[in-house]
Picture (spheres, rainbow, N blue to C red):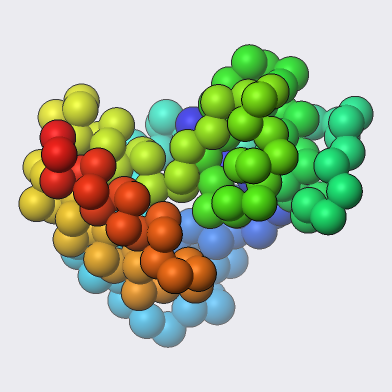
Length: 145
């Protein structure tokens, strides 16, 4: 799994709890069933990559343009919360909602469906998903596994 490309690389690295920089900035403890605990548990599967933006999509953030270019360059799918980005790139690269990793964790027997639904609820509380489209689609997919 690839996190953000070049523009957000430093923010991504320092935003993981346990990192001294982040620990100094945060006062709240991490809930044992929070999504970040599961991300850290499987952090060896994550990498931070850089890419040049060779093909720019208008009205899309620099980070999302970087993500799109990286996915194209490395022939990888893209996971994002940005529905507008999905509409612009779905013919060039495979796209998934950002919550798709929960399905992958279930399929690889790392977590149960019930745990995935609990984690999804936690993600929902921290995201500003317009009309909860991503939440509802993700919940339905998890429940149908």
